Amino acid sequence: MGYIEKIQSMLTHGEITCVELTKKYLNAIETANSQLNAYVKITPETALDTAKKVDEKIARGESLLPLEGVPMTLKDNISTCGIETTCCSKILSGYTPIYDAKVWEILKAQNAVLLGKTNMDEFAMGSSSETSCFGGAANPFNTDHVSGGSSGGVASAVSADIAVFGLGSDTGGSIRQPASFCGIVGLKPTYGAVSRYGLIAYASSLDQIGPITKTVEDASVVYDAISIKDGNDSTSVGSKEKTFDTLDSDIKGLKIGIAREYLEGIRDDVKEAVLKAAKKYEEMGAEIVYFDFPALKYALPVYYILACAEASSNLGRYDGIRFGYKTEHYNGTHDMICKTRSEGFGEEVKRRILLGTYVLSAGYYDAYYKKAQNLRGTIIKAFDDVFKDVDVILAPTVPMTAFKKGQATSDPVETYLTDICTVPINIAGLPSVSLPCGFNSKGMPIGMQIIGGKFNEAKILNAAYKYEQACPENFKDTKWGVKL
Amino acid sequence: MITREDVENIAILSKLFVPEDEMDSLTKSMQEIVSFADTINNADTEGIEFDNINNLSNVFREDTVKESLPSKDILKNAPEQAEDHFLVRNHA
Image 1 (cartoon, rainbow over the protein chains, first blue to last red):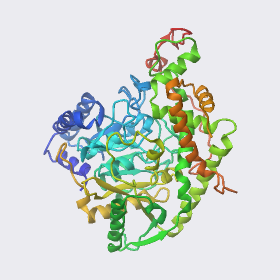
Image 2: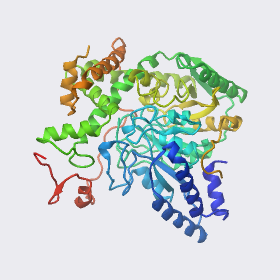
Image 3: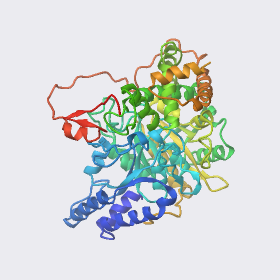
């Protein structure tokens, strides 16, 4: 049983009221957050108001909506009307959205209990949450290690049981990588499945919102709730099927592909855990097929060129005039805008804006941006060809386990290389779910991802669910938070 | 090879000031990233193009009038405002 189902059963059977449950989570946050730094804003009033409404509904004998009464969190780049939303950047300090992101509108209408907003790398640019202006979020398995990024706060909170689930965003791995580092489940949906309306943009053609949860079933329930076509996002498609209905289907004969290139350059303990999972799948009746994927070598440079190009355009709106931070002393409008941006953005964000401006500037556009766009087509075609032969692809989520604090920030290229397994999926717009598949010798979680063809969320979640049922020992609780 | 002058020019285009003492280290890290990006130069992309992920094409919705957000609310987030407008001063 997933945690969402369990909580709703406890609520409807009168084992606990929603207000009591919410208070438990708020107290647990107060205890844990000083060490984890998962939350950057806690919203007790919003949470308790919603909880009261849920209790009243139960008292009237009404049945609950799928996420009703469930304590949860949102990454701080998802707009919440009346609640400060900063992207963990100084430039958005004090910014309070006047409308809700579509995903929050959906969850709010279901009376999901928002406990607070969670930590992230500034503007979702990073792999450790350490570029946050609030400092990084710690890993609940070992607080000397990072929780990953960029949705590191959501992953830390869910792993530590100070939120039942959370929504993150994934531009190049930002849901899956922290889920992998924190030993939990993260789903990056197909591009267009979930509305991006109200998600503060990083790289619009790659960004996608998705759930971070402790179980596959919970990821399925949340995904089904939020994957709705939305007129306010021109790339929104929604989803055609409910993934929950097909969870626990037989995987006998399922063809699982493993790209040889995906097993190169990854740590031995990670490789071992992924291959062990492949073996488990074989025991369950699936067929493992190895294939070559030469286009993979272009994925990282293509990703960084396109993501930075889009970021340089998207972040042009921060000018100190309409919202957010504004410099104090200046001489003329140009000076004001430059000072505001230079003081308001952190180092990594500035680096990516500069890089994006470079690849879009006259003389370099064809060599970098245009070439990368064409290569994006090459990578998409390569994936299309693979999915003619296999049902899903199995791969490591990250080539390593969670690094120690302070290690990610020193060398940018080295840090970018850690995204090698996750970025190809964003480039091709595919769905992928990361789930725990073991631990290293120091007890840090290892994650693997199951990748599907476009809009095949049901297939990958079912495959993930079967593994979770077969290997529950890889889904471990930490010492923190609320134990239900 | 990306030069210090290149970085200075890109900074102007990006509306960012780079302090003098950060210029050398920034140029160096930009050089490393760009040479990493250069690995795509030899890739064969003959005949392949990319438009958008789900091959969507633009559609027109009905041109119906909807209520806009109140300008009073929008201006709440502005650092400075006056008479229902964003305020931009030439000096401060």
